[in-house]
Amino acid sequence: MLDVSCTWRQMFGLLCLSLCWIASKAGYMEDNFPASVIEDGTLTTLQLLAKYKYPGEEHTVTTEDKYLLHVHRIPRPGAKPVLLVHGLQDASSTWIMMGPHSGLGYFLYDNGYDVWMANVRGNRYSRGHLKLNPNTDKSYWSFSWHEIGFYDLPATIDAILAKTGYSKLSYIGHSQGTTSFFVMASTRPEYNAKVHVMQALAPVAFMTHVKAPLISVARSSMNILGDNFEVLPHSSLPTAQCMSSAIHLQTCFYYIWLILGKNPGEFNRTTTPVLMGQLPAGANSKQVRHYLQLQPTTRFGQYDYGPDNQRIYGRATPPDYPLERITAPIGLYYAQNDYLSAVEDVQRLAKRLPNVVVNHLYANKKFNHVYMVWGITARRLAQPKFLEVMRLWEAGGPQNGTATTTEVIPTTTEDTEVAEEEDIPTEPTEMEQPTTEQSEIEQPSTEQLSTEQPSTEQPSTEQSEIEQSEMEQTERASTEKSETEQPEMEKSESEQPDIEENYAK
Image (cartoon, rainbow, N blue to C red; front, side):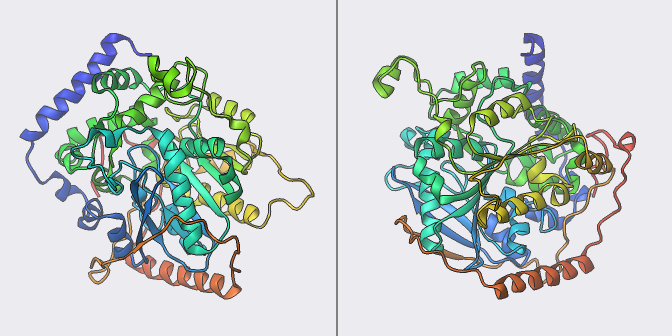
């Protein structure tokens, strides 16, 4: 916990940033970043897919409590489905916005998967409701991540299985996308049978050891706002504010690293306009407050309504989530420099979950909360492992006569050597620069999904489909290589500049 003077200095810094950006002259972003990258910060998920010549669809899912969710798909009909679920203040674009050479969504599609990217209630793509208006009805914002897990994820999974004809899918969640899965799988355990394997990136459940310096600021802010209040809806303000000058960009990243854990070497600085343009994506104050309630405790449980607990739960305190009911195979991937997902808390979670099949603590001590989603080296050091685990459990798991196995990946052998070799590159890889023809934004198709229970009959995956996927991946890679040359990355950490330097393209 920070002392009062430190907390007020941080709040004063935020105030100064808000006041002084107006006086900055325009042109900093345009002078220092490629026009194509700046454009990516303004595009929707479907427009990004179209720009980089990938197929895209939007499907509408209606939850039991009448919320309307928009799920984005990189369609590969007949292929096995995988569902990607974003974190707090994030959206479906997080899986692709770092470009085809980095985004996990692209990687899974290129490896033969039918990729579905969720948008949970309250974010920029899922603000619909059959009766309520999020702009005028405060009751729309009466949810936390409990409702996301209890309503949004089951409806989304059922819709995907109904559309594809499969009886199971694979699941990858980041941060809140892991929390909500643990809610669903523990409170609606029948959904464990619909998941081949769940891979949790920077998992968040227990929060006792969370070390984010801005927790006290967040707690004070949320106490002022209260429940049922929209927080940081998607807008152009972050771009206008942070990208107006070098000093403002430095200040913005100072606060970003205080939230996520500082690791500028794993962030492709060329993509900064994309980050500022796509995020924050919108959320509810109650989601934040629910996390903050857990932080000073040792529990992972439902929302604390204080005096209303007796009426709502029939008891004075909110119930804990029954983690022992989570029978789906779980993979845990976490980092040592993560300010929102502490190693001690994840290891405690691993002991409580009955079917942990991967327990992977990254050896590199600088990897942070978003490394596995946005990291420069994630394509080589993280994503292949996700693919390997998915294929293993889609095939039925280890063929050793046992129901489950637990794999604890060591952090001091070969993985350590690779991580240290890739530690902090001096220069980031640039995003793919499309040709003029590629930059045209195509209009994606839109399709309405029902939430009926899917058929349990699973279609076969033919070898020709996989071969076609590999051919498409090879063709696209050769095309992109001719368009963009990746700069050589230095390996010396001592040469890595501070965050305020060298944001130029």
